[in-house]
Image (tube, rainbow, N blue to C red; front, top):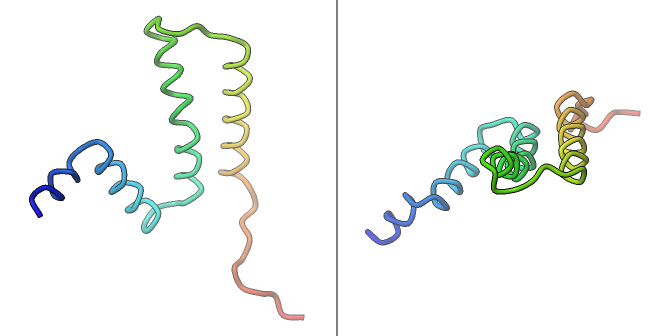
Length: 85
């Protein structure tokens, strides 16, 4: 059992625990937005530190991700209850 506890302290275990907590107790729309934004942030950090170049493809992808995030966070919420006729 010690081996399993040690695995939970690694980055993947921490990420899984955070994801599990977020899906059970957090705002799912925000969690989805953050999950799509993470690769974009990683790429922008690579550009910032000089390990990648900023291209129009990256700028277009960033615009689409930010647009989708804005739509997801400001979109109309629907009720889970069926409407009576």
